Image 1 (cartoon, rainbow, N blue to C red):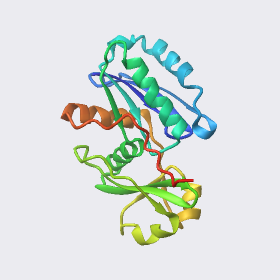
Image 2 (cartoon, one colour):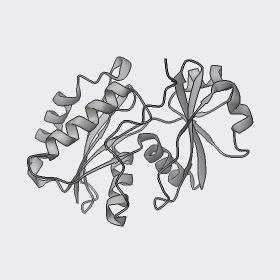
Image 3 (cartoon, one colour):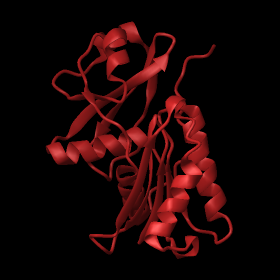
Amino acid sequence: MKILSLELATERAGVAFVDTDCPEGYLEETWEEARARHGELLPALDRLKRRGGWDWRELDLMVAGRGPGAFSGLRAGLLTVAFLAAPGGTPCRFVSSMEAAAKAWLGEQQQAQAMVIGDARRGHLWMGLVEADYGSPPCAWELIPGEQFAARRPTGLPLLSPHLDRILVLAGADAIGLNPTPEATARLAWQREKDRAPAEPAIPLYLHPPV
């Protein structure tokens, strides 16, 4: 299966071509952009397409991460995938960026579960318990005041976050740095496509307290 994957949830972004039938069939373009605006997205897609020599019509699946993360980046990824997929009716999958990244990390570390947290601004955190099993239901993310995290943190589980410096201040907790990648996002989406799992909506997981 040939997959295009976009991952724009954080300032460190990437796009990738994945060919699941070919071990060497992986190409990636990555970049960093302040505030996750990701004006580099279209040039990166063009470079990726030239390197791979693929036509959009050859793709079997288009994928985008839906967060949690920066709203501008998430919206850009979701809209771009929908736009590219529309002419040929290419199937799309949208999955949680941080859930995909955590599942990949858990597999590498041979662990079963991890708590994933991030800075939701205005003194709040988003958090979710992620399981290594790719067949598990999508993670149920929630928003909590930062001062409540210590009492809510499960004992003995690794703590993963894309916001290490801010997490230390808000939650008083040590964490392992983890950023989403287009490869991890593609892997989770591909597995759910194979399993014919219910589709997640093309809506950003934008977890922030109301103004």
